[in-house]
Image 1: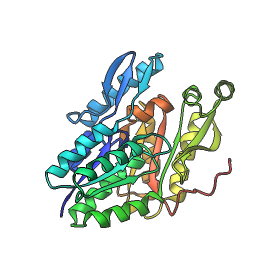
Image 2: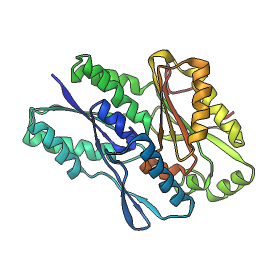
Image 3: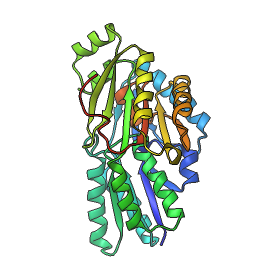
Length: 302
């Protein structure tokens, strides 16, 4: 029996790919200078998404006041109920519960639906990740679905893959990490003065942690690529994700370095979704790939 795959827009799946893989997207809403911005638009091409992304990250660069909002349980319940009424099972892949309250909101919605539809089948997977570290699970789920795998089998595979899906990223300006409380304002100021470019990652529990420190933008991008090249398993079978916050040319350069070293099945490059991108800032670049685990050699700083 087929089933519906749902993600929120933080999963960073380009609209063209969401259509290709038949993945439904529930969009976050960002508020920019008091104006609501829908984070996902199903009608956009890759190029149009990149243009809109540049407009968004330019606004952030220029000091726009940005607020993010949760998708509430009522919204999830509405989406889930519509699918259940159509006789569809549901597989929803969530943004990490240790980054956002989205997972909890979806879980509450599931409980609400099961009260009225006790035979409904709703699987919620906590990606313990963000951006394409969430979205790639949905794409792999779609591929498995097309091969005839049932929802229980696919959910089991995804829960195992969560333990292997790595997300590593670097930021251009530390002030955005200071705004979210990940580092102090003083540390951000000093780090920017010294051109410190940290490498951060989502750890096995879905928290964003500092992993290494580098000096200078080029070294930080080289280190990102090296982490992937040294740790990826079976790259020829993988879709590698690269998300950039209006740093397209640099993303292409990183992709070329990866292609030449490990020859992946595919590299998907997309503009960083607004929801999580606003917390890390313009020119952030993130890589997403599967390795044997999510430790990448441990938590010690280089």
